Image (cartoon, rainbow, N blue to C red; front, side):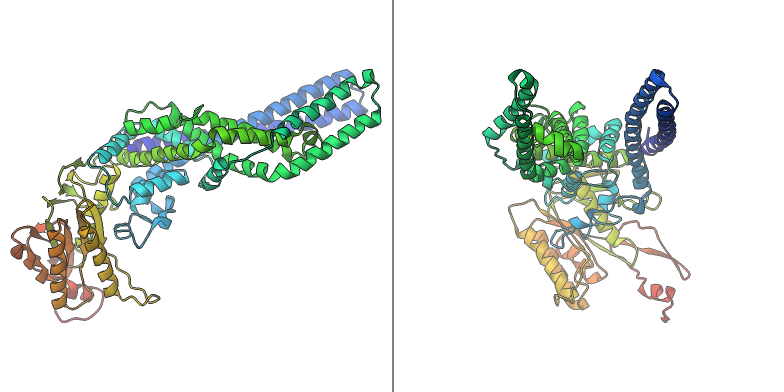
Length: 602
């Protein structure tokens, strides 16, 4: 079943499930209301109607039935929340397929950095971005790991890292049920993505409690219980027993006040940990084929017990901690049992045993969740090609397109940079597709290095570091002109190319040096491209200035001129967005001015 059909079927089934559970919850609510009314009637009958033993028996049955329905209703509500989370998984899949950006989470703008070598130019983060198209994560650390994969400064050990990520994404792409279960487990708290930083800080913090306190927490309540049982036999005075109770309550309340903030802090961590435990449990149960996924799963068993078991233990302890929220228990029963002390020691034992492993567990979960997002992308685009790594720097693609453009409007082009030190000079009229081609090159390389399929019929790619200068912004606040801002961007690209320690640079320069006059633009642009190619970089440059095209003849075939053009029918212009060899021989700036109402004599 293809992705659209799978999402539509899942959405239909989950919608019906949610409706069924809502109807069941309403029916249970009405039944509880009826039982409550029956209980009131029985109480009235017992007190004023003389129902006697039969009335008490009936009341007991009604109370048991009411309590049972309370628990049953809670289970139905939980099931409905899970069904809603699963429904959201399918609806977001359909939204990604439709490029319906407003129906998708858009929280990745915070990952933008003006210092990043390509993310801003290639629309990696923000609204209608590559991240929004790919992101199927439900946790903060999964989202952060995915953001790192989509902004890798270099592809890592070549080609091993790429092939390992690719194998993992392929493995997960075939596991639709697992991806749904993972997203459902993570989505039960709607769009909230709790920050794990506070949980990690709490779990990794060392807490030392005096051992004598643990002894007292058992001895004093035990002594009071023994004294109460043996008081008649030992002829203990009632006043003495009362004094023991009052003293123990005072000590228990004092210790509870001291330990209360730490216990409350642990309690606030539990709701997120519950969701993560369910996600971790889903990973632990899955038999992955890919070694990277198997290693992530093995990290969840790195302690004395599995991660899900330790998270479940934390839930139980916090459940006991939360008993303090009942005022009667907190001020009467709790102090007598030294409840807060026992809970504090249970949490301390948990932190000593499992606290140092929590960070590794969440990192493993984030790794799997990020790769599962890329797997969703692969499943949703079965026609996209899996890139083949090449041993040497190069990039060749057939029918390369931009994945952010709808399938009905996307036009693919063949692109070839056969080796290091090769470049394309792309000319063409306005709106013909020059910038889109450069962004399509960059975005698909980003996808390839992350381990995902690319928007092409085929692609072969070698090791490279992507660096761009496309969207250049001036700054009145910092006194930076547009031209100077572009120079700084170009300097950054050149500095990367001058660094011999990394892979060759794949440069993408859009409208290079368009902030100065034509003569100096040609001289400066040619100088930049010559140095980049001399240092083993490869890439593409777009320009309106045909003077730059002399590089093809000057550099002896390492530069290839290609172009886009418009088709003119009277005053109407059309674009086919097809890349052609050679230099463009037409322009459309004056025609566009006429088209928007600016009178120009052509």
